[in-house]
Amino acid sequence: MIRRTIYKEILKTINNKAVTVITGARQVGKTTLCGLIEKELGFGYVSLADPLVRNAAKNDPSEFLSLHPAPYIIDEIQKAPELFDYLEGVVDAQIKKGNKKGLYVLTGSQAYKLMKGVSESMSGRVGLISMEPLSLSEINDKEEEPFEVNIESISNRCKKYMIDSNDLYKYITRGFYPELYDNKDLSSSMFYSDYVATYLERDVSDFINLKDKQKFINLMTILASLTGQELIYENLSNAIGVDIKTIQSWISVLIAGNIIHLLEPYYENSVTRRVIKRPKIYFSDTGLACYLARVNSAETLKNSYLKGHMVETYIVNEIIKSYKNNHRDVDASFYYYRTFEKNEIDLIILLDGKLTLLECKSGEKYGKDDIKAFNDLKNTVYKLGKNAIICTTHTIYPIGDNAYALPISSI
Image (tube, rainbow, N blue to C red; front, side, top):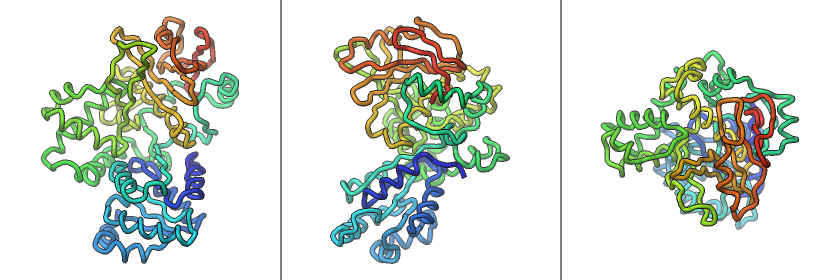
């Protein structure tokens, strides 16, 4: 089994909060980690994916909770939202007895439903963990720290660990769900075909009518070809043939299911007013994006117009994973920057009052002209740290004042 960086953060949360909530897309490994918690910490376990168990929880929540006393893991709890109000009383009763930590672990793949139930009933007693697909560091069993442009540590890392560009494209097209690495003989196309079918049947059906499913699939397919690009609702509405409100609603469904995430634009009064204020869209897994966009091999990707956007999606995802897996996403904020004059910065990290500016590229050789947009933020109200172009180079080299070209292996 692949060692997950986030597991230590889950254990910390269990040891400090009454309730630990783990959200994440289908198949990211939530149930596997719950098995470890069950084994190592002695928690009970029940899954509401089982229809009989789910019906029991919905029909008599009080009795269900009495049969599953703390410490307990309730998997896919959003399928029985009736439990939340009763769970609040059970947790409060335990806290009054002095049992303030490690009572319940709740998991779910529909973040909105799960967090809505928690926020309405148990605010303040809950620790939230957001779980992502595998990172490349996890796949290769490498130490994973929140990414920063620290030349000394990156140099040491890259001496031990370097990704060949051909291997990079293989990883991007295969994707990062654990099952794809637990079963090396499983084809990615078979995995993602089943994944999409299951997602539509078990998650999306809660939100949209059956007659709209094909249009929803069409939306997913179009979005896959737009990963790493601006989200323009009007264009999607015209392409799919549904109104803008429906597109917005469906985008919300995809975000809630952790299929996609949005990167908001960076805006600062001291910098410029001519910035684009639409978010950019990223698929949370490049393998799913490649499957939907019919990019079915590393060779196809290398020759595809989507190569740059898929590499950018991979880099942005890996950096965000490095923060989420260490539970530092609560401290950091992530943005992109683009002006109407088309000056662009792919990723901006704001952490501890410091901005880090990053470009994400699929080539190897870059210079000062490729980071001209960094100058737009020279008058920022924040401190500027070291900045970088992350690309397929195998060597670290300077490209300007406080800016470097870094191998993808540095993440």
